[in-house]
Length: 74
Image 1: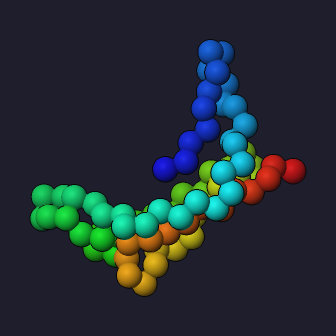
Image 2: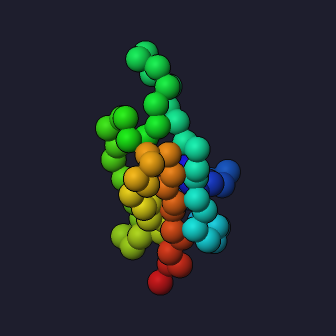
């Protein structure tokens, strides 16, 4: 998960340029056991401030990998 931090004033700070990290060997545990991401419903959430800041890829064919791409603010 990528998040922006906030300062003591409660305002969100700029997202650090994290490049395009890849999350692999990702699994979720539920009451029916542990499965890769393909076994669960999912929603891609793009972090934005009107313009995209961090954009997730789709889940890989193997169901256990995805990446998030940093977008430099305009």
